[in-house]
Image 1 (tube, rainbow, N blue to C red):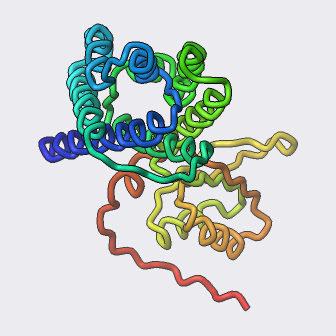
Image 2 (cartoon, one colour):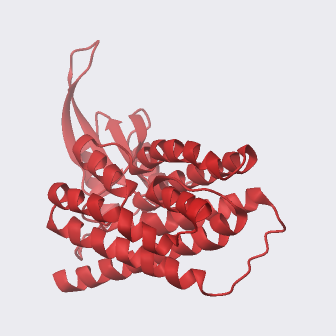
Image 3 (cartoon, rainbow, N blue to C red):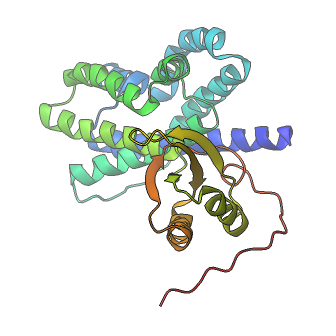
Length: 296
């Protein structure tokens, strides 16, 4: 299983860097849009000194990879080397494939597509614990040490590099590049979250045990009972907490309403759900499900 997972990670990194390089070559470079981070620096070197980004990306990242190796651990270090080499190779290949993508000279469309491909590609890489070197290493360190969002960290670093990019692009192109950076950061966070948002449900009811048992039997979702106390009555309460998918939320509300219409229910967005039924499949269960009455 570990070997299978490693192979999957490697393929994901190669796919991600290829998508990122594709967007960079055919949307950023083709439309004179800058980029943030180390990639943005390589575009500055390309336009001012005609240095191929495929080579400058690799050379600039060498010291950063060495720093990242000491901080991020063995696996992240290996994945970063793979991501950096794969990105350089992808840039080399895509620049030598003649392909023209017509966006009707619309810089807004080009910016959105550049952010989309860059964000998707980088998001795939980040999701398996890799980076493409450069600012990604800094962002990964801040994420692990301080919990900062990689997308927002990269956006801040991009602003700094984009300011330097005014040496070869005008203000109009720089503003469109900011759209690329914003789109990029949003897509990265979206991909890292798995494009999936669970729902957490808190239920305060006099019939908490019956509601909890019905949810477990009907939806096969585990529930937790939290100890609570009424602020006014000072009565002890058993609070139900359960995490469900958005599609299951309607059924949970239906169960609660059928058993205790006076129950207090609070539904919250769950940023990420890890565990049985979310990141891995539930084991088969053979439970007698309660048939809910049909509403007329």
